[in-house]
Image (cartoon, rainbow, N blue to C red; front, side):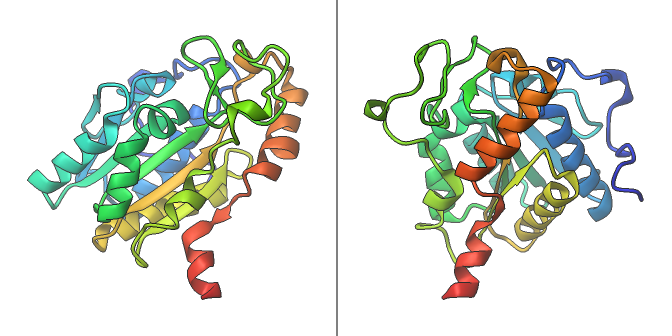
Length: 246
């Protein structure tokens, strides 16, 4: 199947998607759908999404989907997996749900090596609530709550995969992809699903776009993603690279 074709597991009735024009969520979900198709997991997979922009994905696929309380998507996925080990559990969230209110759940699941796949979309802002500063907001970036740019006093932008690499088991999979490279992102998500099938924790961060809250044109949106975000948040397989160097 072509990497640019429509995934079979897409729910056609929910298209076109409900995300803002230029939002990267649809691309991340397409990469997930392609990976699910290639692995033939449509009949086994259950999809849990967080409150925030990610909640608009609750009916995106043909397999069972559900919304969770904000920041609680990972424990819901862990509970589903423990109750029905044959399921393939995917927890889908934004950087607020995963790196702020839900960080303790992400960290604990990684530490326990819970066999789930977590996908986090990083667009550097709290998009659903108006574009406030998020844990991932870049230094100097202007948001609704940092109108003059993010200052050093607010701390450094949070690097999720690199932080989790310090606590995960050797078999865990940690990676960062980008909507600028869908074939690579799809391969990362596919490998993350494969690691879950082998009984291990897997986490993929996807660098994404938010022109609505960035207030950027199409060209400026892509430039911010490729020239600023990707320089601070380097795409790649984080845990795999660390194991190869050791």
